[in-house]
Length: 153
Image 1 (tube, rainbow, N blue to C red):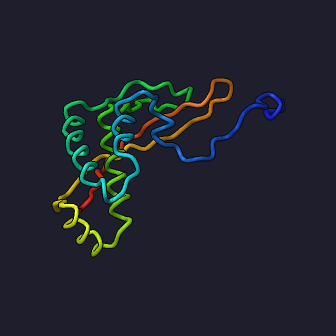
Image 2: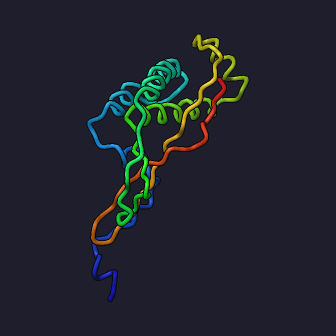
Image 3: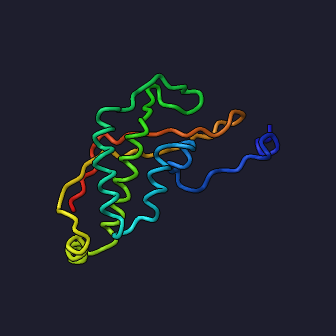
């Protein structure tokens, strides 16, 4: 049997798996991320405000584990995050990305300029993966990190 002929329209996914692959639109996640726009130091204060708001929401509305369909690539006990958890993870990644774009000295100056207080953040990062199941399609799954990511600003 020649798999190339049998699945001639198959195209492997070569880009990283992201929230855009996993979370369907419309969604509160995209509404908030769209409102924020391109992450940079100028909107860091807004990003932090949303992060803190949705961190509380995520604690009150966590996702959960459900029996997964192993035949299509899910874990036996597959984790399904809530929209609030997805949002906190994405906002945390953005905060980290912005902070890592500057030196510690630059951050110190920019915090003063933008009136951002020193603070610590922690969150469970949600990552994404895909599984191509021949004859069935491409399936995306979320995984919640067991160890919290910690950010010091």
